[in-house]
Image 1 (cartoon, rainbow, N blue to C red):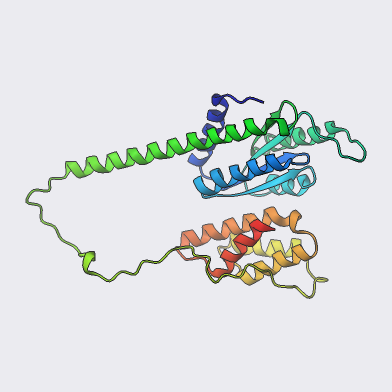
Image 2: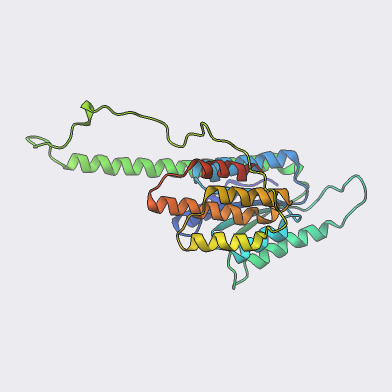
Length: 291
C-alpha cells in the first residue's frame, strides 16, 4: 500500500477545508478488524500529532465492528461535528481457533460509510483500504500520516509568516518620528507569571456509585443534553457519577461518544462565557480519554 504524496495532500486539503468551516469539532479513527499493535501505535500517534497538537481538537480511536453500532448510531443521529477516518484491510488474519468470513467485516465497513454519506445524513467520512494485510502496510501508513502532518505544519508556518509580514508592513507604514506616545508602562508593574492548564493537585479517580438499580443512562443523558442546549453547564460531580455508573455497569463503550460530545459542548460554553474550567472538568477530560 504505497501512498503517493498526492494522497497525503488530498487528505490535508480535506482537513483544511473542514477546519475553514464551522461544525468540525471532533475526530473519529476506526479500524475494522482486530487492530495490530503496530498499526494501533501509528493511529494513536496520528490522533495525538494531528488532532490534539495541531488542531487542539478531541478525537477517539476505536475498533470495528464490535463498537460499530454505538459509535455509528451516535455519529449519525447526533450533531454533525465529527470527521470519521475508517481503515479496512483486504486480507484479515484468522484467529487461532476457528475461522470467519472476513467479507462480513468488509461489508460492515463499506455499509457504515455508505450510510454516513447518504444524502439525508451527509456526515464527513473517508475510508482507507489496505491492499493486503494491515501489518504489511504499517510502514507506508506511518509515512503517509507523517507527510500529512508535515504539510499541515508547513501551511500553519506559512500562515504565521504571512501574518507577521502583514504586521511588519503596518508598523512600517506608521510614522514614528515626532510621534507622541502614551498609555501605561507595564515594565514597572509587579507581574506574577504562572502556567495555565496545570494538572497539579488533580485527582484522576471516579466516585463509586452505590445504587445502580435506578440508574437510567438514556434518561440521565437526555437531562444533561437539555441543560447544555439551554446553556447550563452540569456540575462536574454529576458528570463524574454518570461516567462512573456507566463504567460500573459495563456501558462505557456504548455511551463514550455521547459523553465526549457533552464535554466538547461544555468547553464551548465555557469559551463563549470566558470562564475557566474547574478542576473536576479537567479531571474528567483526562479520565474520559483513558477509559
